[in-house]
Picture 1 (cartoon, rainbow, N blue to C red):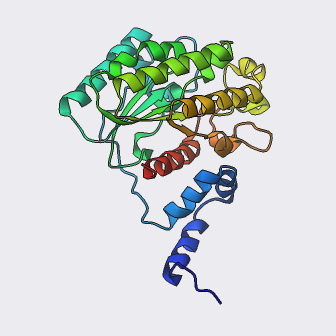
Picture 2 (cartoon, one colour; picture 1 turned 135 degrees about the vertical axis):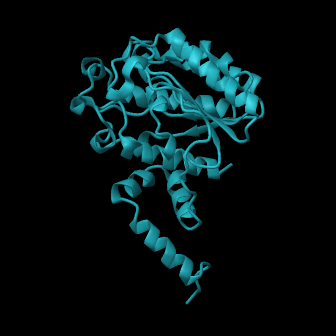
Picture 3 (spheres, one colour; picture 1 turned 90 degrees about the horizontal axis):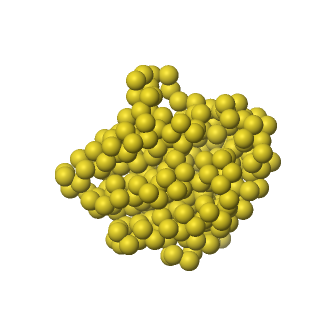
Length: 285
């Protein structure tokens, strides 16, 4: 009988860790072969601790009047911030990080999904800079990339497009804006690793978001189609593509009910899934 290449102690340890992973998560990861293999490798190694972000967390607020999001009740007066006020706050955050010249700067670029990423769930040993704005579109993000000019990012995670689709922006325009975003990032941050993330599915009929009617006229098949375009973009520009869609989709292609607060935004369990994918991506650095 051939001997295993792994010591029995390692195999038993891996088995114990696999028992801690929910069955649904393993099945979801199995749909994405690369991530699934990465999960097995990560579980066989020393787990990376979850530590609070060393960067400042952007104030919690709704920056765009267009999106009716389900945001925490404790926003208070910050909920009334205008888009321009949001830009000012994000500029202040970026300037503060740049002035301290912190190592391993890692940027989250996107909309409310990125904005509400719990900072304590972000992988540790990095300077996380959250540049998400609630309700953001690809056109809006493209116009504010200069906020990052003084930063020296190691990795940039980009997720954008769901608000465009909700508001009827043509797919071709979203793809072109995303192409221009990638070009800008490569030109101004040539040393940075850029990770283009897929758009997540929505909850379809099960959604309770205030803008539910707009979701119902946006089939998840359209999201899958634009994700295919994003995959081509990533390949053409030699950047990474992180396909999160299979990790969040149920058998019908809709957002898994236990990962969302309202069929559009994520709950803590949803962010744990996303966190795992990000951590595994960073381990491939």
